[in-house]
Image (cartoon, rainbow, N blue to C red):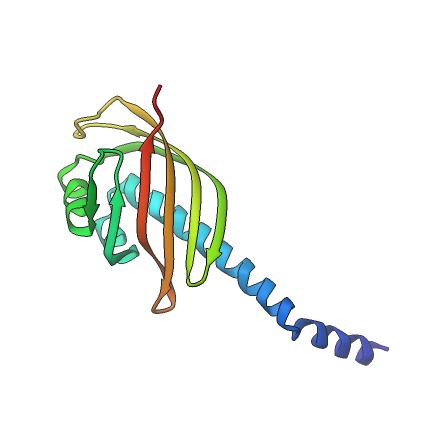
Length: 149
């Protein structure tokens, strides 16, 4: 009886739908983890972590109403313009489109000195686009817009 059950279980796990569902669940878990590392890197101003997680061709449509590439964004972090005391995120959608995963939702950040926005809290809507590259998820694009009070 155990052998028959084992064979059925192996057969079910080897079905294309079963492995696809597991792969999708793994991708979601990995991208959620990447989002957490992204937030943590901004909170701690961890330039090495940000450098590693941002694709070389990364671009952000920033809350500053400008489009920034990777290097200028890292310079803002290095210079203290993006110094945060809190960074909370609510993911509302995480969906794969081919080799890209889109993450959408809202976030709230609070700035501290030396940021020019020190003392301000901003509520924003965001979209992050992640792509698997070299066996890891890298952030290829981000959009973050401030919600008007």
